[in-house]
Length: 109
Image (cartoon, rainbow, N blue to C red; front, side):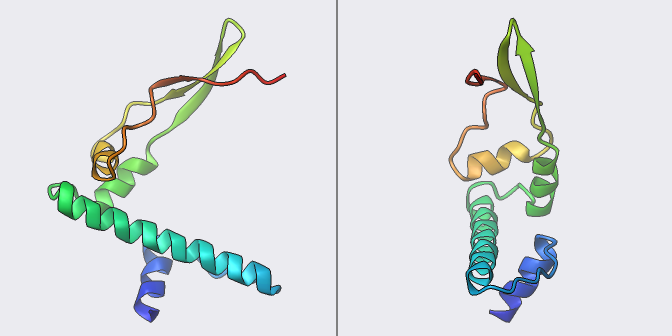
C-alpha cells in the first residue's frame, strides 16, 4: 500500500494537502485512490491492447489535448485541437472514441 501511495505522489505529481475535517480527509483519500486505480487501469490496458504505446509518452501527449470555445452565428461550439503523438492510443486502449473535433454546446440563456 505504501508503494501505491508513493507512486501516486510521484506519478501523478500530487503534493500533501492538509484537511482537518473527517469528511474532507475521506473525500481526499477517495479521490487519490480513484486516480491511482484509473492510472493503473490505463497502464494495464495500454500494455494489453497497445503494447507499442509508452505510458509516459501517452500521458505527455494527452496533456497537449486542448479545446477552444468559439461562437458561430451566435451558436457556441467547442473545437478540439488535433490529437498529437500517442494520445489516440489512450482512447483506443480504453475502448473510447476521442471527443468530436467540433461539438455544438447548448445555448446559455
